[in-house]
Length: 232
Image (cartoon, rainbow, N blue to C red; front, side):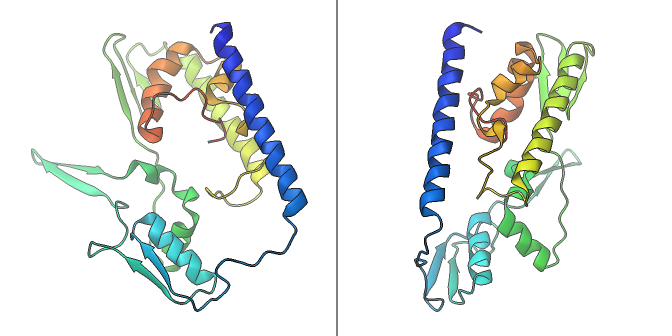
């Protein structure tokens, strides 16, 4: 990795750190003042456009907060949007596919609470993936490699150790249920990019380019993953 790339990492780290410090100081100075909620009238009419995960979760959160006049507008005859699975029938075989974002169900807090209240059973599964590297005669699927089995063994162990470390530290600093709506400013992994952390754990660039980028590009809808915070 050249000097310019390291300078980009350092500059990004400093910017994120300064933003976090600014947010913390601002919350300490002005966060304790009483504010009038924008929707102080609990009987006001609220319209939610779209009945997907976001719309249904927002409506449920509003109802829990005491707003009684909430209406969801959905063009289709069913709620839930794309939060469903589909069974493909081909050549007398069944293949089940689902929405990739549901691999992280715990961050959709309101939606999961609603499902629990309705006694709808859910199952948490790992996001399946399949990477076929024809040049190296390697198949990487479901966290395991097939073919040239010794090639990524050390990287896999280091990657697992890195992920477990991030989970442990993040759970320690969060101190409450996971959600998209909050994060701890004290968590150091908010300011360390996933690429930099992988280098610190000794993970090779080969593993990063051939396994990590193809695997997570479908989740983040981008191949530029170097500056994504490792806490994610």
